[in-house]
Image (cartoon, rainbow, N blue to C red):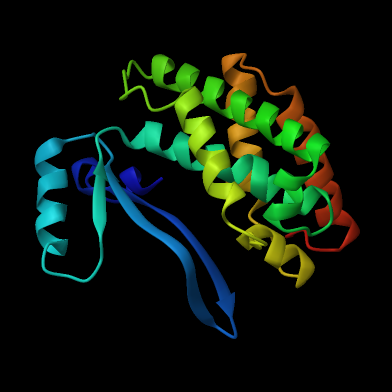
Length: 206
C-alpha cells in the first residue's frame, strides 16, 4: 500500500463524481462535476490544507470527513451500474434504469453495497456521516434517470477490448462483503458474469 512507502498522514484519496468518457485519448467531461478528496486518517487540518491548494483554481473541490465512507459511496453507483453494463455485454445506463428487471437488480445490488459499507465503517470503528442509506440510493437513481445513454468507463473497456478494472471495482468490494459477513448475493452473481465476460473476450491479465 501507499502507507508502506509514504507517511500515512500525507496520503489522500480522490474521487470524481462525474460522467466522463475517453475519446481518442482525450477525456470528455459530459455531465456533473463534483470532485471529492479525503484524508487517509480523516484529519481535518490536512483536508484544510488541500482546500487551500485549490481555492484559486478552476476546479470545484469538496472534502470528505470520512474517506472510507466516501469510497463506499462511490461504489454505490459503480458496482451496480458499471457492473450491469458489463454483465449485459455492453449496455448504457438508460437501458438499466429503463428495464424493470435490471432496475430492480441494480437496486438490490446498491442496497448490498450500502450495507457492506456500513459494516466496514463499524469494523474500523468509524462513525462516518450517515451518508450510506436510503437517501443516497434515491439520489443515485435520480441522477442516473437523468443521465441519458451514458457509457460507464468499464463498459467502454469491455466493448473496446481493453482490460477492465475488475479487481478494484468489483472483486475487492465483494471480498470485503464476504469477510464481514455482509449481504452480497446479487453483487456476487453479477461479478461472476463480469469475470466470465472478461474470460470469454480474452481481456484477463496475466
